[in-house]
Image 1 (tube, rainbow, N blue to C red):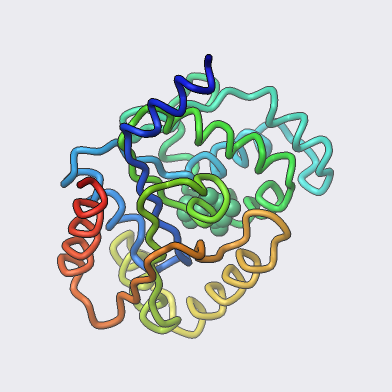
Image 2 (tube, rainbow, N blue to C red; image 1 turned 90 degrees about the vertical axis):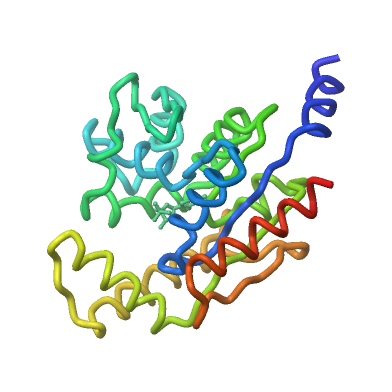
Length: 229
Ligand code: DC
């Protein structure tokens, strides 16, 4: 009964997955696609970040994968109106620190953690028209999503975009430093056993090099509209 109700919901709602490497511009595009289509938006990285913040705060040994999985099963993560809450507290700002960013891989590499966070993502999306953004959305979390996008760009383009973002928040780094951190992160994202960064076989791959953000937005919105028919 519950399963057939879920099937019915899924038949009438539309999940749009947007995956891709860091710096391909997926975050701002995913936001805009959701706003333009009046869909919900899910930033799955925020869940990984909030779980990491919780583990750091609790002093959990980040190298002990079994402890991490157990710990994550005890915290409460909520995502509503583009706000991430950890045990009821809005941690949208706190999850963006360099300390959290560099520690995420400890959790993101643990299959039992990924299973739990993937389930939270499916629960959030259930029965909604939603745009989800991450690394593993089309290939692993929502294999039945009706519209899958894989957004990519050349390493240099991505690094330049990242430099501009950092400069906006007053941090000025050389292209060499940004590229080397980006290469390291790409390697980690591509190498993990589960949840690794990859395009789903049925994803539409969009290379954003040389495209204006509004052109990328238009292409994706048109694609989603064509799948809604
Ligand atoms: O999108 P972001 O930069 O906020 O994501 C932070 C990290 O979280 C990213 O380096 C890898 C991990 N992540 C993941 O493993 N799977 C996801 N679906 C989203 C993020």
